Image 1: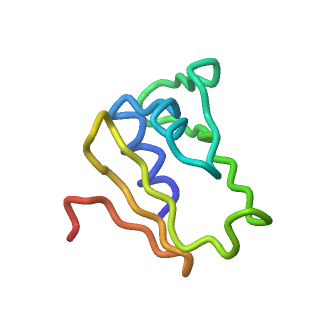
Image 2 (image 1 turned 60 degrees about the vertical axis):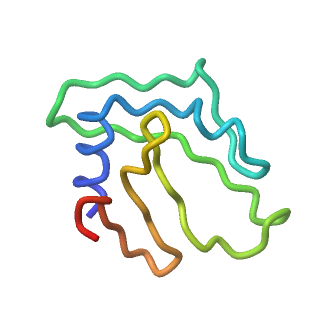
Length: 82
């Protein structure tokens, strides 16, 4: 499941800068992650659960389009899998 997410994120050119607009998730252009397609990578995604309570879902975006969702139950899906 995570490999699909990571490969999808790499293929779509993910950066964490989109999350700067959200109160409890941080990221910046300084945290750009680069890797070759098909290799493993960790994407930074920090959530302050003391401030926001239980984590319900994490959503990845490319520009204004949501491309992947990971739910609190640990189930993930690409938006094309709706």
